[in-house]
Length: 64
Image 1 (cartoon, rainbow, N blue to C red):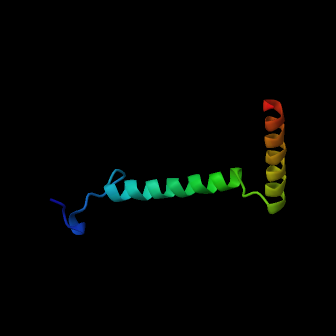
Image 2: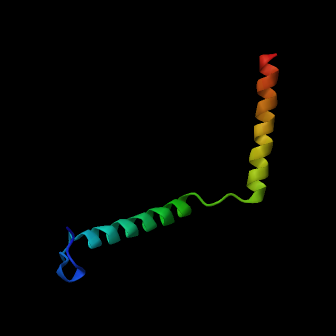
Image 3: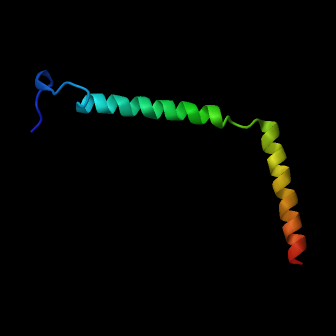
């Protein structure tokens, strides 16, 4: 059975503290990922799409 908040275990390993640390770690990970992999611009997406089409044409020609 769970204890009321007034009797909660306090300290570095309390469940609340562990949860808070997990949340902070997740936020830092998301921030780092966004910094490492910024969203591509529309121009970059167009270039990638053109390269993909060229690649597909080459693959079709090689198969024939």
